[in-house]
Length: 378
Image (cartoon, rainbow, N blue to C red):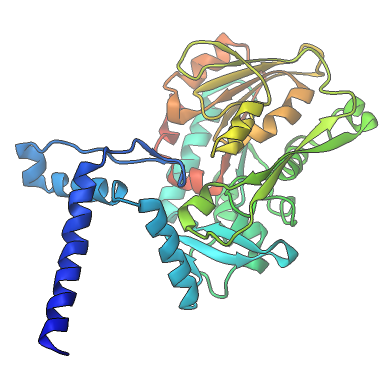
């Protein structure tokens, strides 16, 4: 290697490192990555305590990684590079197959320890002990369990079904556990590019929980309607797998439309806001799954006075957003309660709202990692 070439490489390397460093501090910080659908870390000024403990450097490293120039493009380029090298994952997402549908993406699954899972199920048991109404509990199996045949060979961070098996054994006699594993083992249950279940998957979940839909709906039949062919979910965003085709989002609507005079009240900021089961305006943004109910909110109340059953409280994550239209056909009131954004006492809420039954429904990864489950016992 000549001296001139060595100097050229050194200068090029310095320009790359320092150029991006300068570029980073010139550009304004972004609050959110629409591509990854995550909120990005913001700069936190150092204090004596955070410097001494090392917390400042940890926060700064996360901030720099999140705000790095052209972050979205680098994530995608890394995914292409990993695939070219024959690797089957990038950024904690597996590249799976999906028959004629192309590539299915699987986020890493977190398997809890026996001690951790016992504590989490214990919170559900405590909720049942605190209430005088029936409590049903279910963990939605991960896509890596339902579509195990499309995973890369020997992928380690997947749902093997053991979490649900152990959770069932840990439930007290006051908790009715519903095992959905077999119900969701079909090719239509999940999106290729997202972790959520599809509308068809949500219907399968409903049937596992409550049996068939009300007779009037069954007799009328369900009409399938595609509302978008251009859905890229959060798993796609994290993976950088730009070669993957988008999903479509379908809804299943009873013939003649939803029965009854259904009203929806959301509480996105803690105050009641008139809402609806579907939000077509959300199909114009990156987070198209928020088409169902409008996205995350602490509380959402759906009323259908013409339904056959009473009042249901669902302690849940975002999977229940696409389940809500089916629940609205059965129950006169559905109270969707998200512990992540809500600090109200569940025991008091059940009493105040004269709830008839409670459903605790979480996806596997959320149940295994959520730090708010202790609120079940409040």
